[in-house]
Image (cartoon, rainbow, N blue to C red; front, top):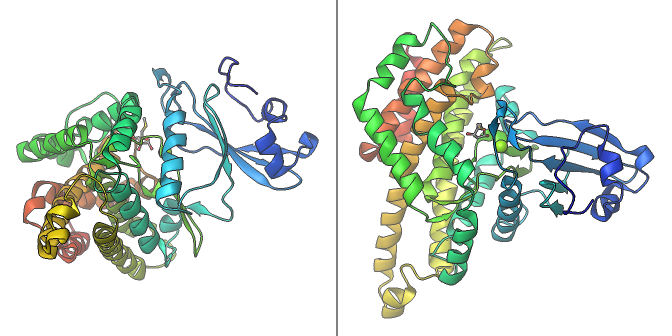
Length: 423
Ligand code: SR1
Ligand code: MG
């Protein structure tokens, strides 16, 4: 296939004929296309994903569609998101080696990326719903976030390179637009594609939409998201964008990548751990999930702690960009000045992270794109109970974020809300 052909969506039936001459794919799985087995496994909101198995191995073929898969062709979406995903993956691989799938081939015209097939990995969200405790996720994700967020910023990069990259990713307008609307605005009014567990949550939803402090806070966060082009974000770092085994963790799907605030990825991610926490009560058919709940709160503590400590390490050892230059601090013997600036920066990330986490919780319960943690709870009353608790938690951390000083404080709040009988 060449990039000059008009775009055409692949299918299980056509994939072997269309990619049978692709040297990169053949070198990984073998060139006897008669032996290729193709499965379409995409369960995300946007794209086609195929697993192709050949005589010598397997690979993943991911192709963007010119519309939002979740909604259909009434919502067009540009193919160029595949270009941003490819470029984000190459940067993440350079900044946090081993944290993303290896890329075998990229075809811009066909909006497709051929990449490493991760096996026996499964999606982290699924593992958490099943009640599996994975020992390394907090460390791996904390390191990934610190390394990609620090090394993609003016704390580390040559500012000419960063500005060129910022210009490149600035064109990811349509995917930013999805986040700007779906995360920061739609949950707080009666937007067309919103849905929630009804009628159970109706009165809570009405209260949240009438909550002036919450709406103002959500818009302040949207402003930070849109205006603070601090670093190259993953842009959609939730537990559905992470693949795991007992020992390995890989981040996937950075098609929402753009230059935004460091706290966004951290907040999205932690929100998904807190939602996993609140959803556990809905998954107790085969026994109580006390240990799983404790595990999930421990994961938030460890993720934040690893992120903080790796970010601090990089601050001390790789601060080569134009911000907080060593010439102003360490080179003048003022190590404490650099530590003071670091402390200030971590405090800002912490405060904004809580806000982003709060609105992410809300949008997964009130907006268009829900998550399986809650959606797989079949009993609507039980689901609504879990969701109501998460909504209350999300509101508290978003609105009161400046008054919350530690992750233990957040988790104490989560545990108190989780134990309430009524909302
Ligand atoms: C219309 S896309 C909805 C959501 O799916 C993606 O995974 C992002 O989270 C986006 O907000
Ligand atoms: Mg995705």
